[in-house]
Structures are given as C-alpha cells and as structure tokens.
Amino acid sequence: MTSPLRFTKGHGTENDFVVLDDPDGELDLDAAAVVALADRRAGIGADGVIRAVRTARAGIEAPAHAPEWFMDYRNGDGSLAEMCGNGVRVLAAHLRRAGHVHEDTFAVWTRAGARTVEIRSVPSGTEHSWTVRVGMGAAHLQEGGRTVTVAGHRLPAVDVDLGNPHAVAFLPEQLSLEVLDLTGRPPLDPEPAEGANIELVTPRGERHVAMRVVERGVGETRSCGTGVVAVAVAAARRAGDESGLPWTVDVPGGRLSVGWTDTGEVTLTGPATLVADGVMLR
Image (tube, rainbow, N blue to C red; front, side, top):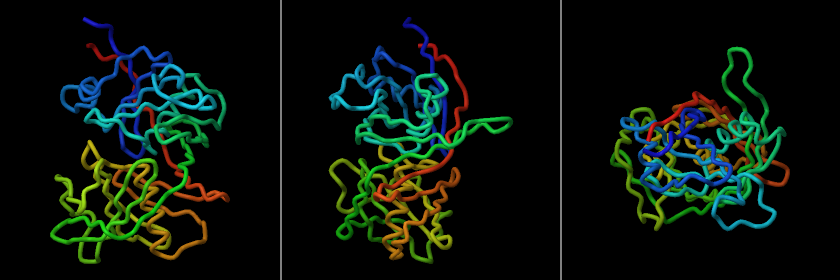
C-alpha cells in the first residue's frame, strides 16, 4: 500500500476542487489518479483537481521569470486544462493559508500564462470564505459561424478565448435558464477540435446577467470562473457597453464580479472557501 494522500477540499461559488500540496513535485498524478480523486461516490468528489507545485519542480516548460508557484489543474475526467478562474482563487487561498506565500498580491503560473491574484479579505469570525481578485488576462472574441442547440433551439454562439475556449449563447425570451435540461452536453456546430465550455446566458438587469455552464470533461457545474468572464465580456460587447464598469454574473453557486483594469485586462472577483483538510487512504 502506498502512503496516505493529504488533501484540501475547496470551492469557488460551489465549483469544487481537490487541492494537493506538492511543493517539490513528488506526486505522480496521472489521469486515472485524478478520476479516482474526483469521483463523487468512490473518491473525494470534485469538478477538478489542483496540484500546488513549485514551477521549477512541476516538470513543465516555463520561462525563467515565471512565478514560483504553478497551478497544475486537471478536469474531473483527468484531462489537462489551461486555466480555471474559480480554481486559481482557491489555490491562492491555499497557498496563503499554508504559508507558501505571505503577500496579499502575488502571481501564479498556469498553462495559460501568469495570473496575478489579490487577496482582498481573509476568513474571520463565522465567515469561512476568502475574497480574491484574479487578473484573467485579455479576452479574445470571435463572432459568427458557430451554433449551440438547446431545447430544440439553434442559437448563435460567440467564441471567447481566455486561455481556454468558451462558446457563449444568449437565450431567447421564451427559454427559461432555470428549467433547461443540461444533463447532456448541448451540441456545438461546428465542434471545436479540442472542445469548449458552453455558457448559456439570460439578462437580469443593467450590467447583470445569469448563466449556466457545461464544462469540458466535467458536465454542468455550479460555476466556472473563466466562463463567467467570457459571459461578461460577450454581454458587454452585445450591449455596446464600453464604460469599463463591472458586470455582475449570477451562477447556480453564487455571484461573481467581472471588471476591467485601465490597461484592458479582465478581472474576476469572488469567494474562495477551504472546506476541509483530510487524508485519503490509497
């Protein structure tokens, strides 16, 4: 029998993760191990697995100036993912709590490049969540040519690249976001070669929308950080909003805020909750 595996369970607006603290890159984390960890019946259960590892020990190619810590993120089916906006907030809380970092603002390396995180509040009293803002980089939009079919409706989808791919579709008035059946993944046409996260959106008010998401390698999740950013960017474009003011995005797991810096970088602000620490017997 191999040694027990220590883990932390956390979530960002109920998009949940198993976090493995592996500063020296000693864990052999293959796809089968990720699937076992993420299994909600026979494992710990999560939408994805995050390995917190020093970039220099992660076994990846990275520039010499890359940040010290790397977010090795895997989807629940074991596949690699470029970036996860909810996951990077959870990772930031973990790194700070574990004493790996001591600053309020620091950068982490991801497969989509460096991401700057700012810890805006820490848990106190009965409050168990951290508040973290993440610099999500630039969003690249491409309209036209792709559709998503949901509830018998063929809807145009906007492609948004945030280091990982998204297809954002706005629902017509006759479709209720809450009652959509997303137990199966809605088909995209054409289907991207590497797949895409699918976000379905409905307006809620001024600079305020709600969404549901079907993630690559997972299925529907309670939230998706990069998906929230993709939706806000697409919604602002659709509304002709160039104010730079924040947008509010509601997801089944909570509420997030998307803003823009003076340089045009998109930011994502929301909670990160570390639920429990444990040991998995292997």
